[in-house]
Image (cartoon, rainbow over all chains, first blue to last red; front, side, top):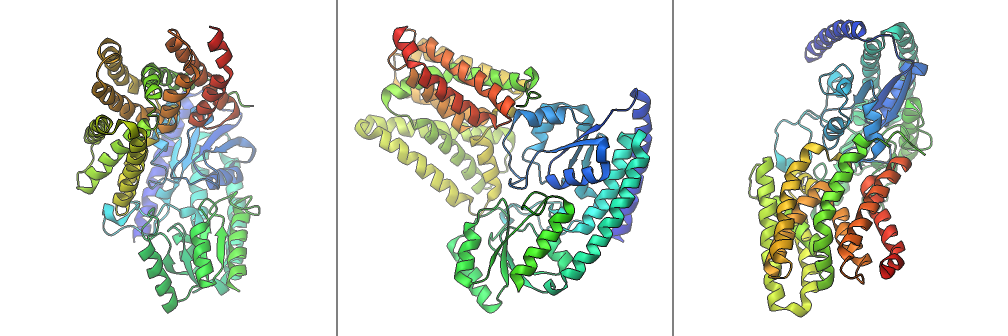
Length: 312
Length: 250
């Protein structure tokens, strides 16, 4: 039911976008050679490249080695957003620490909130972990739900369609190309998902400890079972009593591995690994997080490969 | 090499903010250096941050101006306390200031254990980023610093240390939010250090070093695509190191 109404909203939105896209076309003269797409995270840059091919130039504000919650200001970020035709971000509060100031400094009307050139992809997929109770004492929670949506490839499949439609609205001259590329991507992506699910079957029910609550979509997709979190509340480092509670919890219910992403410090998970003997696993949380995760396909190949290796 | 960031509308507001910070920090920094209390800016900034965390811990919902009022109030309170310490134990003032810094930082961590949102406010207070500054933020800083400079050159320079501490607290609380604590420390200490042996024109030479450091740092940060604040600290230091011969012969 929730899913239905969410699709209805999306269709309404697409209709409105198409209308305003026609207006935009009437106002501008001629199409650009290539449209400039600025993304907040590397996974969306990778997706836009899959869908846009030679019609788009992409750049990402952050890399896989950075914590997207906090970034350092560089002149090229402002210059890049100033020239952008389309801004693609996760949304759901993930970039709220810096994106609003960056948008203000770039002062580009095409990519402000509410404009056609601003796309928050988390709006288009069902979010997990919506807090039932909004209380600041619960830590660094996102009121809209967990924003790390890229770690379920089925979400990327939905988002690819939304991105395609938006590209076609902004650059109608190449609309058919975008739709053709989407059809091709979508076919390859669905095949890859089927293969990943097949390979990952042994992972169903495997117990893991996570460093930060950033993996819910992956857990949900693969059926991993989270039996502990190093950060007791999102964004709060563990105290000694949190750690001892986690250790006694793990005696009751042992886990197979402890997971962290490329930008998180290794010390906490190495500490736990030494105490318990279970392996500490670094997983790429986005494109570029590891050598092997050079594109979206490589990202999930590598995640599943590393999980399988650690669980045997 | 990257030339797209070389745009006055991108670098301009940051450069103007830098010049404003220098206008007050260079003269105050010379006093700080002369008295050997170089960590006072870190201590004051940290105490301002502690005030904000404490306000959160007591359950005040932060609006913009209440956060500011708490930060300035805490900074002024900290300045009074440090002034009192200086009167009482002048021979160990620098040690006391250093201790005040780590105490305020540690108290903040303990209070934050249950409330990371206050931590975001603390971050906003301590690690302002110079490139995010836009012109709309500057008039209020111009007004505040004009007042500080009038009071400093008109009244305080030869007089009472109490007023020095209070003016310093107000100035630093405003500037850390604008450009961050690293640039505040660098703007206070590096130009003052470079001209410590210069005579009466020392102030103007220090202004020149500061302006050159900010200008070159912003240009390099644009061309090399590096974080601006850290790059400016580096260029300020390089220019200061290259300048002593120039200052001596002047």
